[in-house]
Image (cartoon, rainbow, N blue to C red; front, side):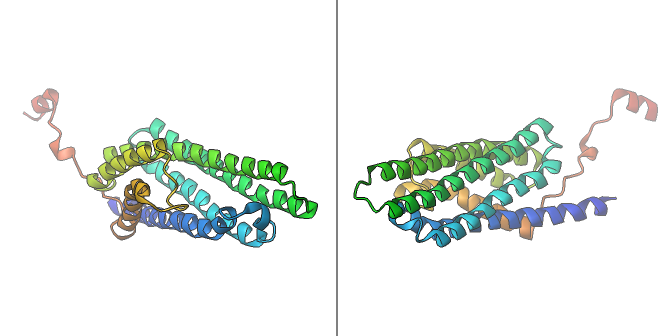
Length: 244
């Protein structure tokens, strides 16, 4: 009976760990590809370099698929602690993925603005610069809301992991502290680690290292099997009377 339960749990742990790694690969590789187009002069480069931008955005979308997959796979395990909080966590990851997708759509809209600007061939760039700035502002706003969903979802996740003891407690506590560091980073308006690296970006490193460590742990060790606590349960007075 125990073996039947253990086998799918290990398989789930490996899949979740792999999805964490895929998520980070999508973010960092995709943003590296598309970032050079957006961060330069999108009016001049977005349309000519649309192929590069499209590929970068497509690679980044791997992250959205991965984070939803992580939440869905963890739900059957986390719901044993609190079904409401586990469902809340899944909802937040879906919300996060949705806003990140909106950010990608805003990035791709720069292609149309750039095409119209280059076709117009005018020296009056104010209208097109305004449209470009609006698209970038919408992208940044969507990323920011997605980050809030990630933070709240992270608190829910590490609370459930701490309560369930599916992984060692230090990983869950580390995760909660890392979420605190991420809150400070967002409150200070620190640039995203994929866009600009500097001393303030170090506030993002605790959660990155934590999730990468968690991924490695799940791939190598899997989930911690629940301990048999029945031997610690004290018999009731009725049971003692019956036995005697």
